[in-house]
Amino acid sequence: MKPFTDILQNKEFTREELVKLLSAGDEERRQLFVQAQLVKSETVGNKVYLRGLIEFSNKCGKDCLYCGIRKNNNKVVRYELTDQEILEACRFAWLNRFGSVVLQSGEISSPTFVKRIDLLLQKIKELSNGELGITLSCGEQSAETYQQWRQSGTHRYLLRIESSNPELYRKIHPDNDFHSYERRIQAIRDLKECGYQVGTGVMIGLPFQTVYDLADDLLFFKAIEVDMVGMGPYIEHEDTPLYEFREMIKTKQERFDLALKMVATLRLLMPDINIAAATALQAIDPAGREKALTIGANIIMPNLTPCEYRKEYQLYEDKPCLDEDAEMCRNCLEARIELAGCEIGYSEWGDSKHFKRRQ
Ligand code: 5AD
Ligand code: FES
Image 1: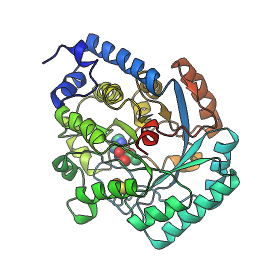
Image 2: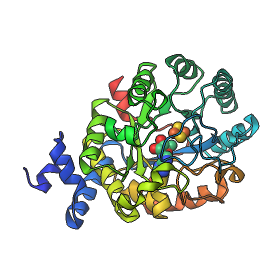
Image 3: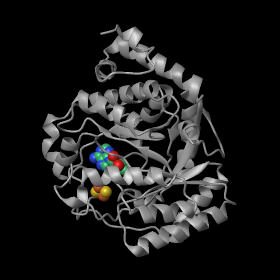
Image 4: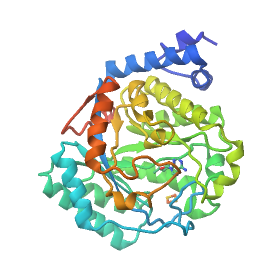
């Protein structure tokens, strides 16, 4: 195999080469990060785009074995923001020149829910003179629903594959049709067909996951020509079935380091996509997201969920910023992004260059 420094100059990567990058030791990792930073500034530049995150409901019909808000976790108090609360958070985002918002929730697909989102999308467009970009992250829905929401004004959708290895996927989800790998792949295809900019991603450091799985995840992103990726460390949650396997996973620090290497390697593999600095990074290291911005990520999702609800949206333990209000988060964020050597793209949608190119 080629020497590490030569692999860094590749445009195409084999599975083995990706594994080598992901397995980099200290000195090699430093080189990987330098190269990813270079590729980033040459292709997508140094701007970071803001997506105000509104976790508008933790009601979920699914039971993913890793997730703190799974249906069968009855310790969670279920909430739903009112339309007014959602619209206020959107107004905050717009007034503070965030280019976009992300509306995220558990997975519900009742006709009432679908209709409600539809109306909200129209209202958000209205209140911001059509300026605020809207991303949805509401799980698997029918192609018709995706179509309807697309027409009502959303243009990006996030749906992580969680793991691209079907066997591993089955290990971290209940074994039934409602949690099917094939169905999830179909949903991602449907989103692309509806004309969305599609974001997907995986968790890093899952029980049973190998570095080969992670290399395959990266190749999967490339194969499906995804526009955006958000991926972060898996963080065990006491009230979930996967907690049982906590002894077999890497340390938090190792998962964090691996997540950064995934971000940097992905930047080399897909130079012109948008890569989010995942919030889960911050649950391990307070400066985790900024570190990701320095080595390849270009999107950050400040949390705009009203504080009183945040503790009920704990997908994993130690979720950060549980009691900071949106304004404080914005100020500290700005300083930290500048420290990371980046500049905020205020009032810009910051669409994926990759999406524009494939149009
Ligand atoms: N650790 C890390 N990330 C998690 N997510 C859900 N549960 C966890 C966990 N325990 C991620 C999933 C999901 C996203 C919204 O949050 O990848 O797609
Ligand atoms: Fe809600 Fe997985 S637990 S979608």
